[in-house]
Image 1 (cartoon, rainbow, N blue to C red):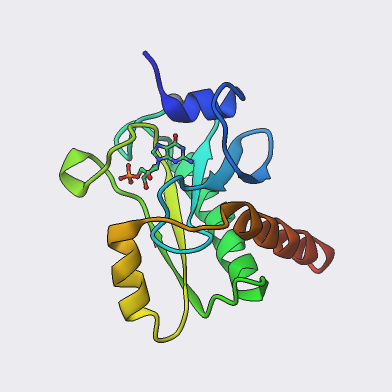
Image 2 (cartoon, rainbow, N blue to C red):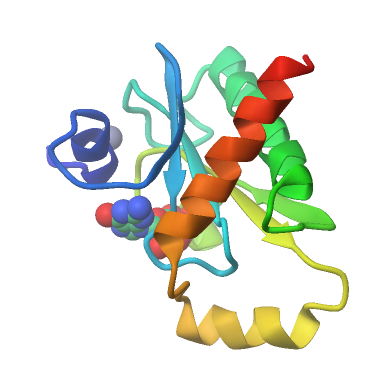
Length: 143
Ligand code: 5GP
Ligand code: ZN
């Protein structure tokens, strides 16, 4: 069965990587709702909340929280974040390899965010990725 996120894990599909360890990978969404929109996935393929072990879901949340913190401290200047898992087709899941969305938000960004929900693009995703990686590295210095 082909899975684009498994292809990314295997390095067979491109992605702007933000974070990686033995079990998890985080990378920028290809059609972002906001600058720095990140997806956190387990490297082992599971579909949704029905087949993903609770510890794995906890791991997604742990890494998502760290990326959300980094987004606040980063050059993206996030003032907050939306964190979400779309669990199943009925909940608008479109890629059936479980993932947690981290959406950096700015105070008062309602109109810009709504516009980007239609456009879904960041003209400089490489720079957004660099800013998040840089902020994560700073967090690592102060655990
Ligand atoms: P879902 O609707 O399943 O919660 O979200 C899937 C997300 O994956 C979407 O926001 C979509 O833009 C993103 N996506 C789909 N294909 C790719 C891809 O090949 N690379 C990356 N980086 N993101 C993808
Ligand atoms: Zn997969």
